[in-house]
Image (cartoon, rainbow, N blue to C red; front, side):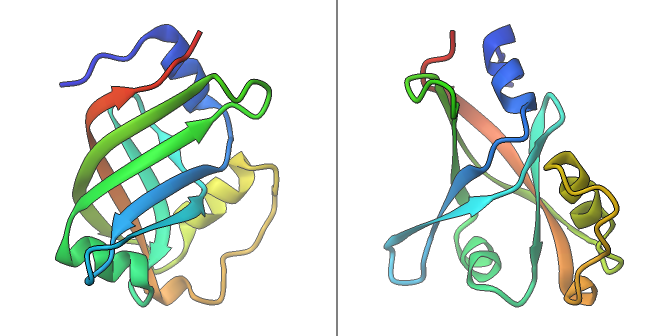
Length: 131
């Protein structure tokens, strides 16, 4: 189990866009901006089961998330881990929850809600500088 410092927890609690890296079928890395939520133990993302990132994680569950403090780019956290679980979210409720977290209260569920899933990341290691 990974132990987080108070500074790391504070950074991960902020609604900052993060960069999620996954491994493509040709073994190259792809990185995409993501909304996320850290619950003190795992990181959760909203996604769909029809996109490449989902397929990448089905083939290789390794993932890496980089959260960069927009106020101080030397303050960052790199979370290394793997896909722990996929939770069906056909109503898009987690997407709505994250939309609110990221400053979009009252946003309706997206049109692709029937394909929505919650990707749960198990964190194996945290690196970076937070202070």
